[in-house]
Amino acid sequence: MKTVYDFVTVISFVCMVVTYFMFTDGGMKTLAHFMVPAAAFMIANQVGNRAGENVAWNVLAIVLIGAGIGYTYIIVRHERG
Image (cartoon, rainbow, N blue to C red; front, side, top):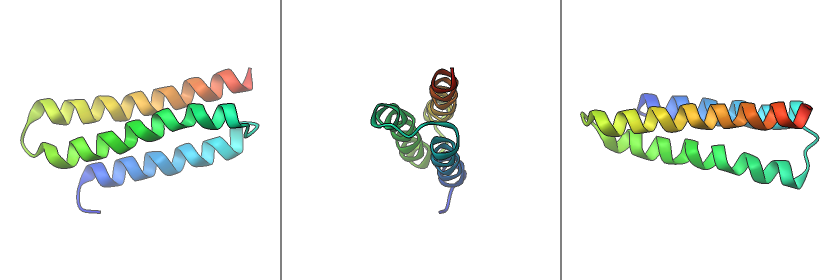
């Protein structure tokens, strides 16, 4: 773990997993929905690590991280009714 993106995406992923176990019923349908933000965190990490000084790639990585967090919130809110 060398970059900020490594730390942020891994922490976001761990928080997402904890959220899945604590705040959902744990069904397969819910798990399938949680794959979307997991993929967003993975892609954001790769894009951020390769970005270097390119501002557009850094912005894309940050947007993907935000989208993953937002989608996780939407899943949990919908699951809890």
